[in-house]
Amino acid sequence: MARALDLNPAKKKKQKREKDGAPRSMDVVKAAGVVLWRRSGIAQDVELALVHRPKYDDWSFPKGKLEPGERHREAALREAYEETGMTVMLGNRLPTQHYLDRGRIKRVRYWSATRLTGVFTANREVDALRWLPAREARALLSYEHDRGLVDALLESL
Image (cartoon, rainbow, N blue to C red; front, side, top):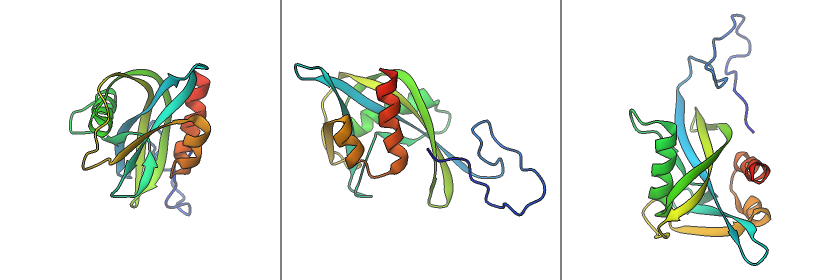
């Protein structure tokens, strides 16, 4: 997992920090997402849904920025629907991820989630969705900070 970044380590004065550890003076991009999972096959193995974003040519979990006035849980549900076409039920909270995205700290709060209704349909943001066993999902994920979410999900089940 990424940790809070001190952009000016030479500074003598102690910098005030937000609850999540990010420096208060920094612009933190708030986002929310889900690790969508299901049980599959006779053995009821866990499979995870990864989405492909053609704009970035990456594989990740459904996530996105909060809209003005939106709460994290609401954003997680909205993003899951927008990116997968599925209505989901949120489960356990998973670790919050912090990482640099275009020079700003991005904080993404994640939940485990299971599908209630809907099926995937490609859209302008996401052109593919793959259900994969945990090992394959971990290997396909484009970002190291997402790989820890696989372990966190499995531990929470």
